[in-house]
Image 1: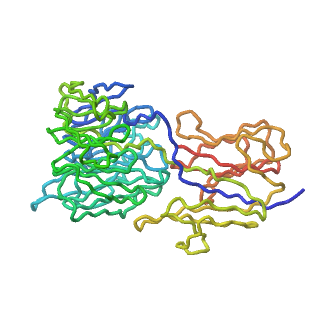
Image 2: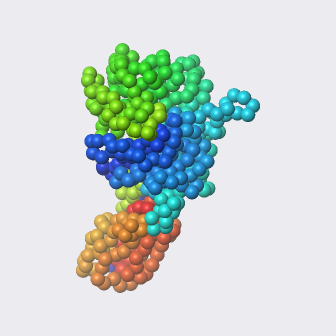
Length: 548
């Protein structure tokens, strides 16, 4: 029987998984106990809100449209409309235009960031003071006001009010996907009384503490506060301030703002983009509604002025309509893609004793994007063969082996080894922040040549085992009673063992009990594992995604 060295290469890349029909914007909580629920094409009044805020707020629902939490930047309420046990004392402000923004913690479907920016408050020695940009992490597996079996979530004590920037900001905050959407997203804010915009990159490793700074020292009047809104494709950023309306190009690769254009020289405190991303809507408080053609060669000349009442705040709903606050009324733009006739209607909903104040919830428009790891590059390689490592992810990332300097670019290097382990490092660099993904090429001795074997197929080449092994490629140990365990379906397994390794090659679980059921104990975040399964002297190598 031929004996060969089998080389197993496991590369785990960031992979975005699109899940259709997510409904994270289905429930809006805002203003003085105001709320809307979206069911199909209609918006319906909610009267169960416990929140009072004059301006900024955020609310988030799950993939089925069920409320998770909402906040005014100072407190955080759960789905039962109770303040979470650790939900008081947040560093946002109810008088901040966009006091808070919820965003996913990359690698988890149960953890969320709540970013906060506060408003101006008087200091004891005169002038103003700020708490800057902070974040707290919400863990929806914590019991909170619920129970262990039915958790309502809470803020992680050690991850509350974490300071990113201890400086004065202008009440605006937004999030934009990175150009490599598998890598992460940017959080963008602006410094008070200065024409500086700060872009912070959020990745699987958390918040990069050093921002990308875009400075426009002589371009426009500095003033505060502001409301920031990005287009859905993330390539345009609009800033509405007390003095003007500003448009920028946003470079999703670098986090830089470029090509400033002043669209208007008077205050515009709320902005929305049409569903097809071609039109920019902006409102000047109690003044006129304006529409700009985003892709017009002369965007300023494309300005269309509509005399309307209401629409103190603008927000695109999940039904494709733009809604506006009219204090205790709700207004709507029925056809916002239509520049010539957008079909505007005032007071479609009477909020009764509640009111909308002047700000709808602040949403990250790509909140429903799922960031996870996947080892689609898993393969096997026989002794003497050569394999090419995939090229780098972007210009800020490069391959380097552990034997070479990290700054030596070895993009797409050939690899050929006989046995043992070769480690490679994929290094990412942004704004002096570095993080690495380490990958192992492991040499393994087997008693036969193992071809690439797909999950749920025969183990081995020559029908030595005359049965089908059903091996899952994913499981979700979240206690919901569905796919909570990794287990193998088979009538007969002999001389059995299975081992699971993480992306760094660390053994995380092993057993020789063929009737085992593993619940993923010890794993905290979504991850991808490699398993090596042996039975009757034959090997099967595969991967499994763990969704928590």
